[in-house]
Length: 212
DNA sequence: GGGACGATCGAT
DNA sequence: TCGATCGTCCCC
Image (cartoon, rainbow, N blue to C red; front, side, top):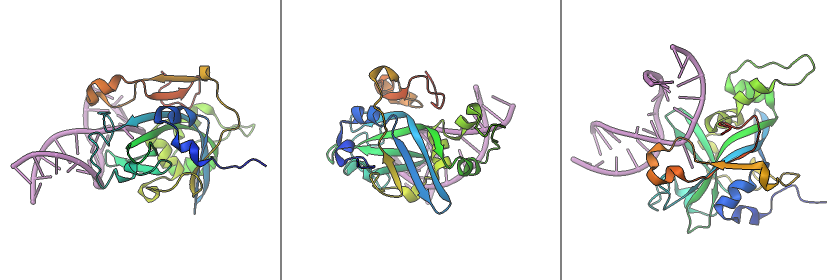
C-alpha cells in the first residue's frame, strides 16, 4: 500500500515548483480541540535574500525568521498587524532562506470546529451540505485559515511531513491548465518584486482569496 | 529606549 | 477607504 505521507524529497523541490505542487495537497492539524483539514488552493512564494517582499530579504536571520534559514519542510509562522497569524512552508536548502505562504484552503474536516474558532454563524442546509458562499469565509485568506486551523506561534518550526501539523499528498495530479498565477498580495512596498507572478491558485476554485 | 510599520481582516 | 493592535526590527 502506498504511503499516506509525502516523501521527504517533495519539500526539496525548487520553491516555485513546490508552490505549485502544494496546490491540491491537504493541510491537517490535530489539536486537543479536534482535527481540522483543508485542501490547499492558493500559495505565494517568497525567495530571499534577493526578493524585497521576503522576510529573509538581505539574508540576515533574525529570531523571527531563523526557521527559514534551515532545511525545507518546516512551519514558519509569524504574527502580522498585531492580531493575525500567517502560516508558511519553509522551502529551499539551508543556503536559501525561502518560504511559501499558504493563502487559502478549501475546508474538508472539522468544519464545525473551524466555524467555532472563527466566531462565525454558519449552518448546514436542509440537505446537510454547507453553503459554499459562507464556508469560504472560514479560510479564504492567510489570517483566516490560520485561525480556522488553530495555527499560532505554538506551531512554529514543526516538521510538516509527519507531525500534528502536516501536509498530505493529493490523490490526483493537477494539470498545468488548472493552475493560475499572478502578482502577490499586499506587498506594494516591495518595488520591482511586487510584479513577480509568484502567487499560484487553482483556476475557478471558489475558496481562493482573490480569484484574479 | 523609542518609533515606525506590516506577506490582514472586516466594517464603512 | 480606514482603523484595529502589537511583535518585530532598526535606529538612536
